[in-house]
Length: 141
Length: 79
Image (cartoon, rainbow over all chains, first blue to last red; front, side):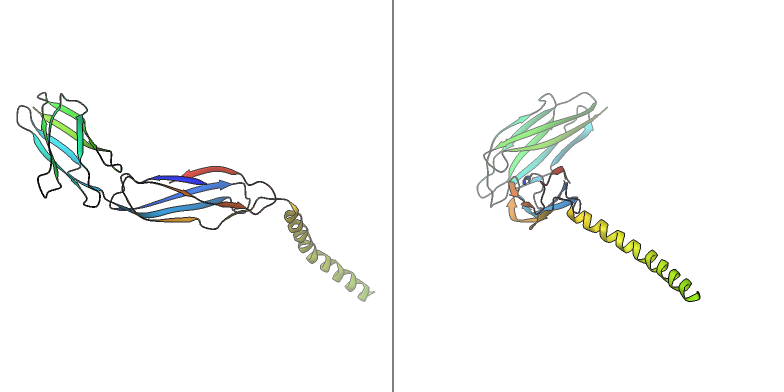
């Protein structure tokens, strides 16, 4: 019996999964299989969720730092925003001797209300070809 | 006459006590005769070495059938 396990989302944690196989064996009707091991982080994203809350017509900004782990370096090739009406995004590459990419996220929505948006970073890493950052906007009157 | 009665009653008690044992043995023997699949797995746990996030792991578990009729996998549940 072949299994495939995706480790995405388990960076810095122990992955533990169980598989129950129901068989026609009258004595051993259920066989429990287990898969376990540790998953290393390849990137630090701080914060991993952006919340822009404040009054309309005021400046709402946040900076996200994306730091590849030294063992698993990568560069960000491009980025996109799901709805460009909501956000303006500026990406700054790391300086010399620095690994951190900075993403400046600025609210563009002037109408009061809430929105959900997403920034997608495309990298040259085979392990993390895409990084998604969720953005929640809460524009008050 | 008293002795005959005693022997007869003793015989009845013996028969009553030995009946359930006899019926159990017969049932066990008949169950052993029914061909059934017997699942056997040598390594039910797969421990992998540390891997970077994003790695796609694959593994093959070997379930052997030691019985005399085909073993069927009815359902697989992951959690």
